[in-house]
Amino acid sequence: MEKKMNEKQMYLGMDIGTTTSQIAVVTPSGTVQVLPNMDGDLVTPSIMSVADKTPTVGKVAKQDRFLNPDKVAEQFKKAMATVTENGDPIPIITGSDGTEFTAITLSAELIRYLKESAEKIQGQAITKAVISVPAYFKRQARVATKEAGLIAGFEAVHIVDEPTAGATFYGLAEGKNQKIAVFDFGGGTFDLSILQINSGGAIDPIAVDGNPECGGSNVDETIFQHVREFIEKKGGKLDPQKDLAEWLEVLDSCKQAKEMLAHKDVAIIPLRVGNDRFSMEITYEQMKEWSSEIIETLRSCCKRALEKAGLNPSELAKIVLIGGSSRLRFVPEIVKEVFGQEPVTDTDPDMAVAKGNAILAAAYFAEPGSELLIEGKIHFTSAIKPSQIAGRDLCVAAITQKKAGDNREYNVPIIPSGAKLPYEAVECFTPIDAGASRICVKLIDGPPYELSSDFKPLQEAEVAVQPTTDADNDERIEFKIGMDIEGMVDIKVRDKKLNKPVPIKFKFHTGLSDSQIKQQRKELAIRHNS
Image 1 (cartoon, rainbow, N blue to C red):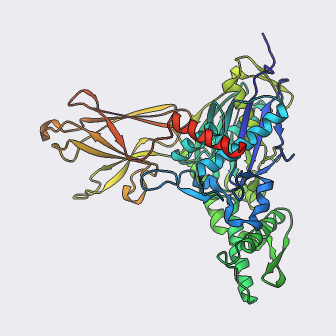
Image 2: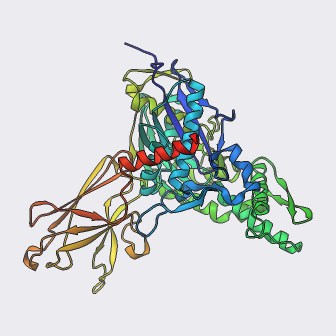
Image 3: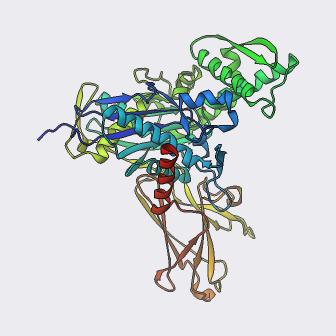
């Protein structure tokens, strides 16, 4: 029996981007709707100000960039996996009252603001959400994003990959069985995902590649560097230590020039440095030349994704662009060069992910059989079945004797990139010292068979084992490593000599406890009710 979405149950889809964020819901009538924030804007700058006792977000916070620039945080999504040597989140900014904010607490503030915006419009509490992350996001960042959502007040948060969300909206709107590539070029990250879309609602990723530190803001920086050189030739100098607001104003002008060059051949950058006023003209071809390393990164990721998928470009029906930076003119040029076809232009790159997240939120949390109306086509939540794959290789540091006498540790893959989630792997290893009572295990979120010392471990664990002799030592330590559909990792270790699980002492934090999340949620509420 068909039924509409229950009016008492609303679920939020959230695209929390590096530079901007968007939200959407599936309405009681079953349609997908992008919601404005409390300022009335569909796009919210991912900016937060702690200049006052009560933090502000978005357009209001942006004003403080020039009034109190040292109290404004931007692009904190890039720091979601940044931790100390002990694995604790690193404070990014300190408020006027001395409160320290990490990337997690900053993200929680942004999510809280968007959550309350949606609740105000819908006239009801929203307790469950889907939040998307880049497919190539590090695993610490996935955990941190989920924690931020829970701190913001949600009872349940489900993490999905941004390209999967974008493909969900596009695929259901198209209603065709086809293989597509999703080119997701956002403000701070890039993913290229290849997916199989089925008309009934199944979305199956085939391969993914990307760079979590390559986005449109990198283009801003390349323009900015050349503008700084131009200013110095004019006898001026930008110094963030002396005038951070002036520095940020010029950076903003560079971003605006980039956006103008998405449509025009020439842009004029007005400059104000000290008491001097002048301007600089840049062309699209100059911006493209300055961005050559970024373009090569995008091109290489696309080619690697095709190789991982084992597909020829001609086997892809469509190339879909999502992410605001995909509007840059060199993006279609890359797509044409690598895939031999023009990208489709019938999807709003800024809103596709938020819409897809809203659909997935209904699919995960709504009653089975709830009806959705997507671009004039009726779908049912029970039929929408997106899957996810491991975007990055998960490895264990181990001595492999790649060369005679080489006792260095290398990344041994446990869960390969492209493995369909959930996934569980079992591997057995031999302790170096048979008589040891403890061994150190390092998990590496990095490429296979590279030197482990070149990468910061995702996790280090001290494992208590039974000392034995060399005769009984061979491959006696069994690792069972699981990765769930959200990309979260679980580790179990068994000493086959003892034939039982052994205790693990993790060096880095494995996520906030329920009590810590409740405490931080309480602290967030106090900041906004005091």
